[in-house]
Image 1 (cartoon, one colour):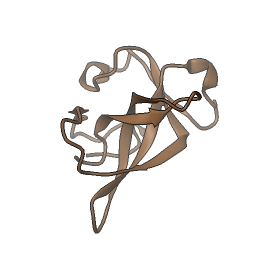
Image 2 (image 1 turned 90 degrees about the vertical axis):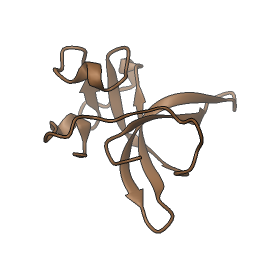
Image 3 (image 1 turned 60 degrees about the vertical axis):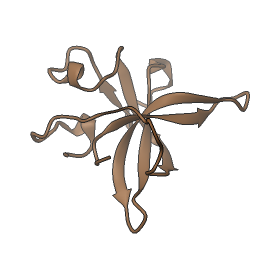
Image 4 (image 1 turned 45 degrees about the horizontal axis):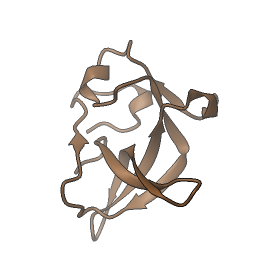
Length: 106
């Protein structure tokens, strides 16, 4: 797992149930390699225009990120994650310098 990876992680819903949701790894934190992740959502009506960043199917690297619809990075939704989680699907973003919407280069 590296900074810039998109992963699926369990997130508590309003009813208390856990559901896998996409998130982007912002930082791998020493010493135990836990992750600081930021949520990704397709609920565009929840987007904070001055804060959150759109991920659009029109972006040239959209097919590489593993998302299936226009989404946004929820910069106000940060969560620590345990690094070791078996069978966690991830998608590695491209290694070239990335636009600000991706937050961190890999």
